[in-house]
Length: 384
Image (cartoon, rainbow, N blue to C red; front, side):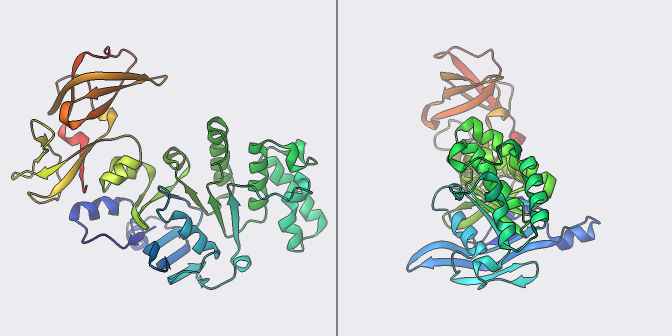
């Protein structure tokens, strides 16, 4: 399980260490006695240009068999371009795509044994649910009895057996997407690619189908590459997240690794909520001096040299509303946002702007003065 990408310059030791946590090599796994899963997909030196416009910078990516990898990032970050090159809808400008040890860089779409699920369901409107799901098996010449058995099992898997004879127009959006999922899973493609399949659904239905997709993956152990711009969706579904930004891979790792050990201010800001302070490493390398703060921030161990511009990331749950921490910020409560089991306290801290502190249900009143604090080891020093 490994990835490399073209960087914006020489990577610092801190970035290398953080990235390594999410990218242990297959050789390291073997030497440690761990069982590395077979390699399903390898993309080497993959890039795409449209004239002078760079859609994807030179990128290497490896995906293991049975893995759920999410390509996450804002619009224009290159995630859909990468997905389209993997399935053959877009030809790469450079690089190679190897699936199950076979070079498929120039193989036609229908010869790659890849299943596709899109945001728009692409169901045949004149076919019933049963006929839509059976279509890929009949196209492959499978016998009628075997088709019937597989379709029944697939519809049971997505809980649509009672709707087998309905037409797509008689289904809700969520039901139509489940038909599209069943149609893709039924013929057991080598890799399943999903391009924002839940983007058109409302929040509650989207969350419900996220769990269904997760269960389908656990049942089938299919290799899935999933594109989304929704960070919560990526955190809920993924074995690993490949975070993309400006046509490059910013960071890759498990959801927990990327959340706890971001390599940049962008990664910290895009995954979850963060309080981010920009400054320079002090001469003692144990502090970060920020122009917007009255006192330096006591920093955790890091590999950035003195004078280097950095960002200090502190998650809202790492802060507390008292003065007991190593680092302290005084401010005025601007708002308290109720979120069910907890509240988020928004605090104005002068020139540093606003910070967010996760608190219980007993929160201070807006307008009151408070002190937010945190310990040095509860923050992360990253590149800005």
